[in-house]
Length: 294
Image (tube, rainbow, N blue to C red; front, side, top):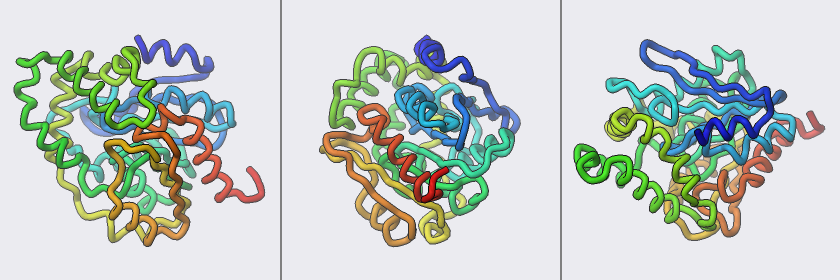
């Protein structure tokens, strides 16, 4: 219901639909507006809902906002035996863009899932014109060590509260990752746990798949092949999450058109705490691509 309310707030042209990519695999897509395509990729615990404050700002600026939820995330399919690696997820996002006829997009991606955008940027420069990373470095695994350790307890989640337990842990994680925690309300926690409420088994299966996934090869050697503008947004307040300094240094030393911007007072969820900063970063990439205007 929260997503439905979100769609109703946007323009009548907003569309939401699944795009099949292979067998039982389909990705949920939400798009609105017209103009330069801006493709938004949520983090592991996100969905189209997590960009609800950014999408209207983008469409007001004349962009075509397209939210693509990777496999296992949000309302996308959650097959048990799928490849949930970052490489495979990037392949699927590419497949969706090709089906939609989208080229020259600015990618906006959150947290470790920004690594999908970096992979696409060097592999498919025809699809990717620029990247805005929200607290995401060139991760070599889909999940953090802490996330993988937590997956040991997945078989016990139903015994110890089920969705209520997941909701409690998500709330705790959102607060710890934020600089300004006022956005973490009962309503937003509901939004971030909607997929678990709808299909807890599927969500847990997908998380296990992400935790156990293996990449085809490392990303780091290919960072020098990224020639499009890349803007990394970092929260300036103390908070959990965000890329380690080594990953930021790798981006800075490898990508020629790289900028990093720290947002004072904000944390890991800049799309929630400072949505205008995300749009300004998209505008910055657009200005670098077209210095004399669109």
